[in-house]
Every structure is written in C-alpha cells, then in structure tokens.
Amino acid sequence: MTKEKLHFETRAIHEGENIDPVTGALNTPIYQTSTFAFETAKELETEIVDAMSWVPESFLYSRTGNPTTSVLEKKIASLENAEDATVTATGMAAVSTTLMSLLNAGDHCLASDDLFIVTHSLLDDVLRSKGIDVEQIDVTDLSNIEKSIKENTKAIYIEALSNPHLDLADIPAIAEIAKKHNLYFIVDNTFLSPFLLRPLDLGADLVLHSATKYIAGHGDALAGAIAGRKELIDKVRYYNDNLGTAISPFVSWLILRGIRTLHLRMPAHCKNAQAVAEFLESKEEVEFVTYPGLESHPQYETSKKLLTNGCGGMITFRLHGGKEVMEKFVDSVKLAAIAVSLGDVRTLIYPKSSNANIIRFSVGCEATEDIIADLEQAFKQL
Ligand SMILES: *Cc1c(COP(=O)(O)O)cnc(C)c1O
Image (cartoon, rainbow, N blue to C red; front, side):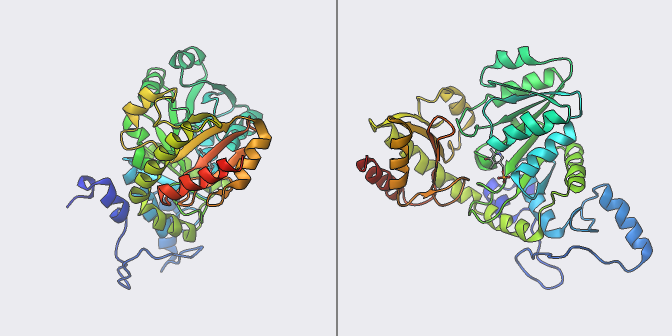
C-alpha cells in the first residue's frame, strides 16, 4: 500500500510514523537530545557534511535536525501535497525564515494589506530596515497586483484567509500572475489548515503556518511550518539553522499529537462557525459579520470555488455602539475565553479596540448550542 494513495485522514494519522525498531514503541518517541554520538571520527565527519546539506535522516545536532521533528516534517509535507516541509519554533519563525531565505536587500515584495499584526511589523519595519522594499496592497483586486509589479519584485506574500478581516484571495489567479512574472508566491495558510485548502495544489510556491493554531489545535505549544519544493525548503532550513529558530523535540511531539486529529477537528470548527455566523447575522445589535460561508462575504464566489471542504472557524464581527458596548459584550461571555490566538478546540474571543472595535471570534469544537447560548446571554446583558 503506497502512502500517496491513502486519503488525507489516514495520512494525518500514519504518514511519517514508524514503530521504534529498538523498543517496539508504537508512538513516535520524543528524541529529547541536543546532540548525536558516532562510533568513529570518520562517521562524524560524514554526518556533518550530510546534515549541513540537509540529507534526510542525517542527525548531527538538534538545531539542524532531530528524529521526532523529522516525523512531523514528513507528515506536514504529505498533508500539504508538498515535496518537502520543515518546522520552526514559532509561526513567526516560519514567516521570517521564509522571507529572509527568498528576499535580499534591493528586492521588492508585494504583500497583502491585511496581515497578522506581527507579520505586518516584520515586513514594514524589520525587513524594510534591512533594505527590502515591501509594498502592501489589496490582493483581492487582481489588477492591483499586476500594476504594482516592478522590475525588482521577487515575491508575493498573502494570507489565504487574512487576519483579522478574513479577505479571501483568489489563489489560483494570483499564482498565474506570479508565474507569468517569475515571482515566488508565498501563502500563509494558518486560518484554513491543509484540511480546508492546499495552496501548493493551486500554484503557490511555498505554504506556511503558525502551527500553534489549527495544526496543534489544543493551545499548548508554539510552532511554525513551511512546505514546498525541496530546493526552497532547504533554503528555509539554512536560515532556520543560522537564525537559531529551531523547534524543540518535545514541541514537535506535541504538534504531532495534535495534527493526527486535524481532520476530525476542522469539520467541527466549520460547522460551529457557520451556525454562529448565521446567528450573529440575525442579531440587530450586530453591525456586520464577516465569514466566508455567508453570502454577504465580499469574496463569496471565490469561497464557493476554493473552500469546498468548509470555511474554517474564524469569524470577525462588530457591534453597534462602539468600544463600550463591545467591552460589555465581551465581558459578559462565559464559555468563550477572552484571549488572543486562535484555532484552539476552546472558543476564544478577542476584542480589538486597536482595530476599529472589531471582535475576532475563534469558534471552538464545543457543542454548537452551548456556544450560541453563551453569545445569546451576552447579548441580553447589553
Ligand atoms: C499567529 C499567526 C502567526 C504567528 O504565529 P506564532 O506561532 O504566534 O508565532 C502568523 N500568521 C498568522 C496568520 C497567525 O495567525
């Protein structure tokens, strides 16, 4: 039975995993070691060469490679339909190592104008200070992209479903533009996960994640992941090694434990979020709700085309009445935790007074009725 033929659900559980040949341990062990020992000086010398040129299964030192981490990399590569994948200590390490491995001083990078706040600051401040010219544009308007491409443009960077406004870019169309102009097309797929969208199949060059979110799913670890062609992933590995943003073996193990149930969690997030979005849209206290499963979403047609497996667990909405009403509402919810982050099995609510009083709602996997009842009682407090 070749693993390529197996379904996503089966690969989420089996891909990359082997029964431990020494002990028979069924579950992948945590190889909690900083370094690896060799029989001879010659063997060490050979391993140094292999590890530094990213030969698979060459383990020298855990910053460069580790067996637990390697299992996670294989699984993520398989789920994203990628040739290869690598993982990092945080999602931001995935974003920064990817961009630094592809962009140099003097290059121009086009990016979406709605991005995770720290990605925005990396692009607009950190990379700009190193001589990389970043231009943020509305990528839901394709003509905007074409006309912003310059002689020195090297890459297009977007979030598949953007944080926090849930813009849904037309990935196949952007991929075509990128190919035509010979640009790297990089997609942050954090909000959807490979269960809902696989950007590499749609023409992207690299897909990355804050694995902290849906991939881990349980709010207990920080990690990042990048998938794509081996030639590009090896460049990212080099930066991950040099910048020292390696994941720890224990965290790789936690992410592995989470990812095995990704295909069970995502449909629950989608079902709950669709119901919550429809509920919110029915409330007169709500000024607007953004969710790609609602006909009112500005890119609903793109959503129907790309998100055939569900629209994810993230909702953005705003209440009438400004900051005071928003805070009263948020303070009244009981089941949802007031917290940043997302993609947890627990429902999280994040009031963004710094962003026009929008509320980012990460719908968890609790019973649909309980999540809606919690919101209903919070509306009654207003
Ligand atoms: C959270 C997040 C990141 C950063 O991930 P960390 O694991 O918190 O470093 C990057 N992109 C998106 C879309 C995110 O939501």
